[in-house]
Length: 162
Length: 96
Image 1: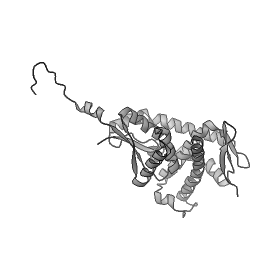
Image 2: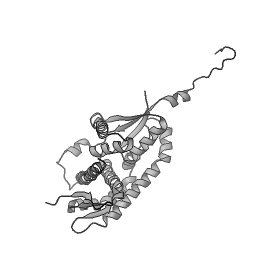
Image 3: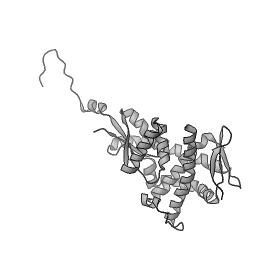
Image 4: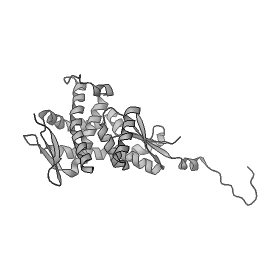
């Protein structure tokens, strides 16, 4: 069985090897998922208010901060989409280490978008009994698969920091 | 209100009081974010050591929210901005 690994490829690059076709399918779906960031549910989750009570502060926040955040999320998704064009036939991908934050952002954003659009709950995330032939089941599956890679990237970052 | 001659009385306004009140930065739970990711974000944003970051993460996970920082309004806004850039559900509120 192929084991996916995230490791350094020299001082300036990161290599993901052993990318399973199922993972690759989920990664190729990223741009399509990220395009839904402007749906009302996803937007509310990704660009939340500053406070839970002050409408004026929230309005200022949405005007001043939300566009900047959205721009950063779009840029991260674009970076990952470009990196993904480099996946080899044997399931290997090398990208510059400077893109690590973009990868974590895009993977996390895609998971959150799916979670909001399909109203995913803690119970949904804890069950292994989901049907990938349904839209919601496929969303849960993709959240888990993308989370697997995100976990490896976070682990690598934690090891790097420690 | 009468004051003694030569003494200037400065009334404390509501706005002045509001500036003194600390603001709390709160992170709320969601079903999607990975626990290790949230811990990493707390370490990066606040510079917390791993144990403290993990303690806040577990509080978010088990209690639904955690007060992760308290202080001046401007800095609180900065932290909420940072947390939103990592896609965590965060807001600030006046300390009661």
